[in-house]
Length: 323
Image: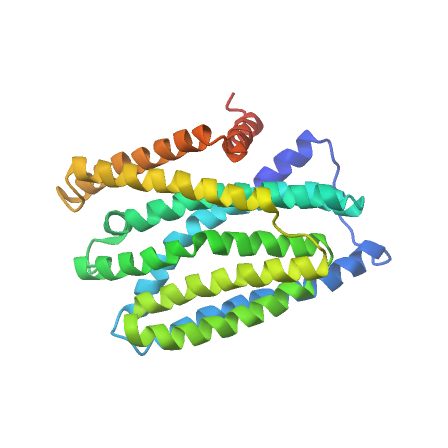
């Protein structure tokens, strides 16, 4: 699907593709130098997964599956939403850096980082508050019992807490790539892996599988702090006062959404009633209450990300021919 969409965009831009490989192209060697650290960073990420699986293997049977199912749900918004925002932001930041417009570059980093947080904060809230009925709808059938659903929902709750930090970490890694500092994210990834291992060893004894999920959230938050510190040291690019104001306003809007979802849950009468259809109804009502209240709060607080997301959706509709 990704290749198909790319081909559609290429055709509309009237770009012709010719097969072949020119080894004398200077950009090819530069690409290779940048690609090696990126590949190493992927290996570090896999190390975190391996550590989690090893520690989970010492817990009660089914823990590895519990973590796998919970992480799979948490990865959906990262793949569908966050990746799209990061992809859109990359060309503009690259142009600003290549043109040595470092002030514009910092403004773009603040703008797109705000967009990433604006998207992931309400999604994380929804996954946390709707974790149990969501897992029931998706997986509870056959050998997947209500106890397994409860364990998976618990892990999903803690994974969702780290969702904004994971998204920010991915975005900040792209900022490093834009600044031609591809090796720094690898070093940060190694530090995050160490933090994750330490947190896992400590929390798994207290919280079991939920401790492993919480360790991932804590290490992701540490990764964001390390990325910001390294960005400031290496490039001078760092979140300014307006960005931290956005963080507070988005947090306020998310809090409003949390109250709205809690009120809607109380009115509906809670989840887990009337089987799958009841859970679907509950997720729809409570989720819509949260998202609508979040957008209204964002508009009331004059968050520019609300308008930015609206423009992006209109562009996506136009691109797909849904106008």
